[in-house]
Length: 96
Image (cartoon, rainbow, N blue to C red; front, side):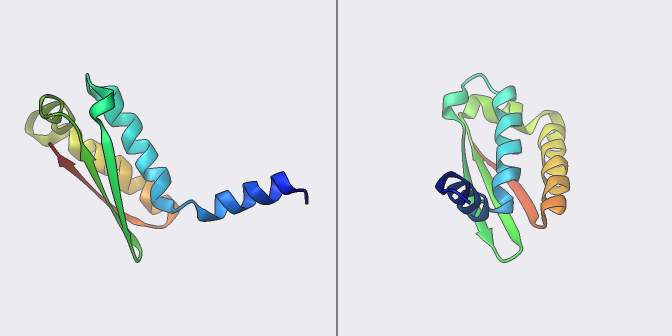
């Protein structure tokens, strides 16, 4: 094993399961909003679960939440499904 392979293995080991879910949530949210630069995610990991807080501009918060909360409900469903596959429980909240 050379140094590049060792570095790659070390970086894969430090990636948390919630990182994959956060990447998915960020990808979806950035596709919905007008101001992608205002989007940030705060991921809080505890034992066996993760909380992903999505921050965006107030104008875009309505787009992320959707009419009657349908959009955020769909995002939460996708995040929970991926979380289940990678072995963690996930909650997604929008902080306007």
